[in-house]
Image (cartoon, rainbow, N blue to C red; front, side, top):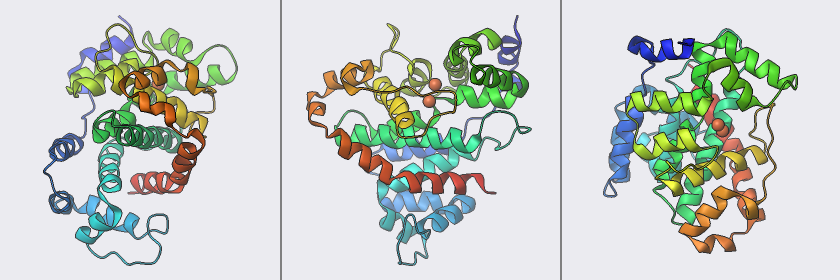
Length: 291
Ligand SMILES: [Fe+2]
Ligand SMILES: [Fe+2]
């Protein structure tokens, strides 16, 4: 039995998935949930409230108007931004930010994940493809296997990254060789133990390619596409860069099946809109990582 199996077999090893995130996802799944209720939920958590107020008053989110209460912040930022912030903060703060200085830059990791999450929820919403909040959450956790490898097997993870950077082979192949499982296979095993919603588990397992086991094809395609797209606009790890062309992308084709209207997307404008969010994404990560 390899050490990853040993790790998986010991239930005490399992990190806890942030319950607040799941609770919050359930709260907002209900279409009737009002902004006031979202505000009330946030107010119960003082750390979260403080961080949201700070973000709402930072120059990236706000030019000039002082926001003094959560109620004001929720109305001012709007429900999409506020939901994204709450989900990101609740998930990111559950994982330690430093693991003995080993190879996986957490700022980079979360920037990539949050960028993918924003893109996934925007596509879902603009093209009516999926519930945007679920797509957001799935985007946020799609690579969780990498983070957990880095957290629980820092030396081995370090060697995967170093060997990839030295050009010894493809990152995924080296991952598989060192651990016996790729980050998506490992991530899926953990997600099963966490009892995450079906679609999110599938995104973790299949975001590198649809398989015949994929049921939530559209959701997986949205996040799979957003993953690659986020790399294209600069949110990539130093050892990877996959140039993307919409026309031949399997995920894109899957999304087109769900909504042929996607054909009309103005790629340049869409990229511009996402790039415009860059400062907001980075500020959110900075805030999540402090304290
Ligand atoms: Fe991945
Ligand atoms: Fe990724």
